[in-house]
Every structure is written in structure tokens, then in C-alpha cells.
Amino acid sequence: MSEPAPEIRHSVFIRAPRTKVWAALTTAQAMDAWWGTHGSEIDLRPGGKLTLRWRGWGPEQDINADRECVVVEVLPPKRFAFRWGETADAMTTVEFDLEERTDGTLLRLREHGFAPTAKGRKSFEGNSLGWGEVSILIKFYVEHGVRY
Image (cartoon, rainbow, N blue to C red):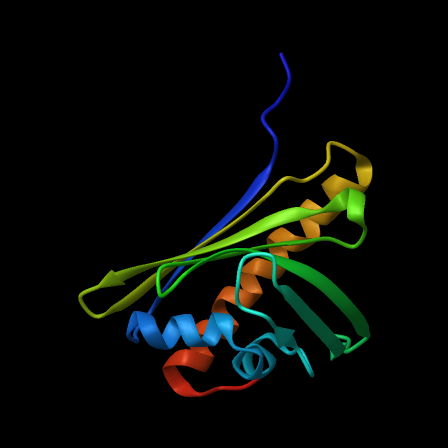
């Protein structure tokens, strides 16, 4: 019996209205502020292009990468999803679901579709750690204006 495909799940509670969290997830200027990207671009519609550009990112400030993504789903202010990967054969889907709560918003993240290969496992491991860090970065940005 084969193992289920790995997927990443993270949740973070953000003390802010859902519309504010939505704006942080779906505007290039806000993404650049909390995600550490520079010059991101987004065409916010299914089939639209999302371009993420990192320069000097990470604890060693040695990550310089561009990531071309395809927007999959846009349901303001509830759900945003896109596909991304280092190569066309290593694409995964990233989903953000925003649940309105009494004192803020619960942001749920899910990434799935990792290839059952050594490269897919390495991507899963790295992204698992990365999404944990990113969850805190968006929380601090939305709640306190802390920029990466």
C-alpha cells in the first residue's frame, strides 16, 4: 500500500479583519513587505500570472530567486490559490483560506502536489520550514506593520 502524498498545512491567527489579511496576500506591494520579495507582480484572476522575486532572502541572505506562478483561484476575501514550482514538472498548489473570527482572522495554508521523487521530498522539507516562517512574517506585518 502506498503512502499518501505529503502536504503542508499551517494555520496562524491574525488579529486583523479578513479584508486586511486578504490585501496582504493578494497585492504585490504587501507581499514585498512581509515575504521579503522585491518587485513582485500579480494579475489577480484565475489564469493570471504571479511573479515573486527574492533578493538576499533567508538567514544567510544568500537566496536570489524568481518564481513564476499561475493564479488558480480568487474568492475575495475568503480564498486565494496559485501553482508554483522550480520547474514545470515540479509544480505544487498553494492555497490560502481566510476564516473570519471574533477578534481577527484564521489564515489556513495548504501546499500539495509534491512529486514522489527525491527532488519532491526535498522541496516538501524546505517548504515546510519556509511556510512556518512565512506564517509569522505575515502575522507581524498585518498586526504590527513589521516589514521583512
